[in-house]
Image 1 (cartoon, helix red, strand yellow):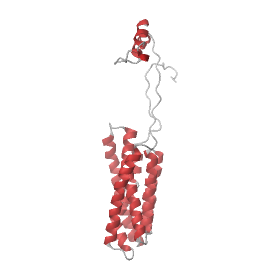
Image 2 (spheres, one colour):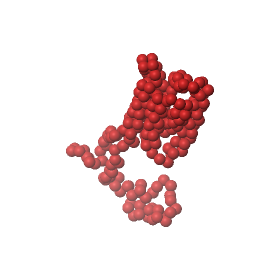
Image 3 (cartoon, rainbow, N blue to C red):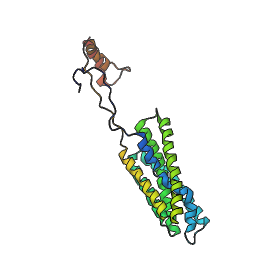
Length: 244
């Protein structure tokens, strides 16, 4: 509604309301990288810490994780075109958390293998969904700049995850606390995703034309750039001619 002293046809600047900031999606993308970084640094050592397991077991589990990552990318790429990307990201965040806690207290190869598969699925699912979500929310005009700044945030989480897990392991002598902390940190990504709603633009205002523009308005309405051959559009030029 126009304010006092403002006509209905005067221009007015609007600020988008409830806009999702790119930084929120960067935090959602970065939080689960705590687990990814911790797995990069400690996975082989963690597996060999379990009694009876060796480098062969670590290689098998790591290969299974990479295969699961590929499956997650292909599967979520398909589902992301048909369902809400934002809601599909939530199970991925929980998957990272669950995998980290399973690795924290793993006592058998079966548990390690299951955790590796879950982490791979979550990892592969998350990346294409959240990248596509950025494009959906903010378009392609500033996509490169948004990805550049987001990469700084993601690199920070990658650095913190590997370093923090190493410090906690040296302090506690086990992987229980380090990977539990990383898992809970990854779970915060679900909060950021749920908070990142689609940006809302102000409603379109209808401008009432006055003077000569009001007489020219039917011509603009009933004479499109490309004439239509449909029966409903044929009478339009006649109506425009009567208004002259």
